[in-house]
Length: 199
Image (tube, rainbow, N blue to C red; front, side, top):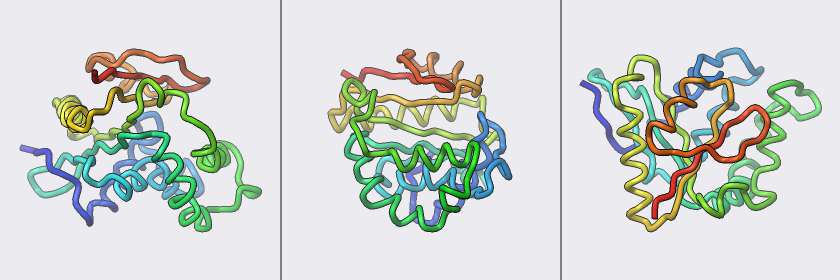
């Protein structure tokens, strides 16, 4: 039976693969961008670099990592760090913005804009998370357990709330979060935001 365990150094490649295989509205995003590695560089690897102590994984019986949750207790501080320390190291390895188009260009713009202003949801929900599970461990309670462990870790730190943002096309995620107690927040085009008070 799979089990939850803390993230450990060496898990990064597995987490990047899971991120890629679930990045297209919950489906495999391999080949969607000209650079498959961009997904992980934005949505999972900076979190385990900055907050490895908050990251948890689902490990299968044969020792593979098949799911994870990552996040930060302080979104504004994280975004400032992303802009100052993380993205300058990562950006030179990406295709230049002027050569990019479509979804790839949008993600580069998103990365470049991070940390430039206070985050929309951070005042009331200062923490945020990303969670991804491969199909083999979906629908078996592992997502619920990952979120519960992550939320408890935030409560132990005195964090007052947590939010997340999902693609409007990820119907599975949109159904999942309200069942865990997240409530819908005002959202931008193409996305759906959810928050949970931890007070």
